[in-house]
Length: 299
Image 1 (cartoon, one colour):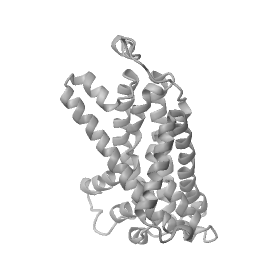
Image 2 (cartoon, rainbow, N blue to C red):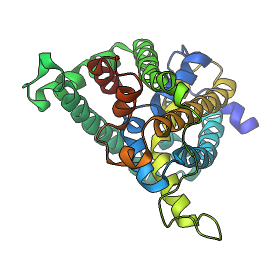
Image 3 (cartoon, rainbow, N blue to C red):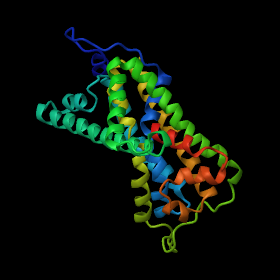
Image 4 (cartoon, rainbow, N blue to C red):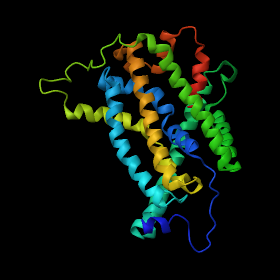
């Protein structure tokens, strides 16, 4: 612990970032990193592999995500620096080349994610009547410019924007749950694809396929490590915030999974282009379709 305490603040008069992030902001930041566009399209893919047992895949993938999250929480609370994975790699191995490779890899993954996300946003915005016909690239560019402007303003503005968007994307998932509650109990939640279940039970390969797919929906919590230097009391709030974010996320995911197969048969979910939009359309036909499109965009 002595080493951990010594590393809490940088020595030598190095400039530090202002600690302005609270525990609840940290929790929403972690949850917001996980909740996103992935779950809105992932349900259909998992249904093709797991049948109606989508909830089981999310529960099992939480184990892998939880172990990784606890590792991040432990390291981040000991070394709360904005460098994240690159800084921890340098502390562990003291090899600059390896540190630069890790840092570059993280940067490339971020660029890939923002590029893919911007394109998805552009394509979804084209579904709105007012923006129909506009080039996808132009809409994606405007999206990136807005996000960049918010990030340029500083961490406080970025955090508030993240809180607002997290509440919106969580609101979309909670809407799916709310309109589907009356259908709960109408579906067999252990209805697997034909030929999967054997006398010996469920094969490990089958479960592994579901876990690999659903683990993608938990990716994003690792970004919490990058804001550790701006977190109040990081030794307490980083581990607690990450655990709370993981628990909150898996509860929402499992509830959405149960809701989806309760309203739409898993065979149809597997074929749907927008599975959750199909769930809302059937469970609440009165709900405006364009509103859910907007929610999907902001997710």
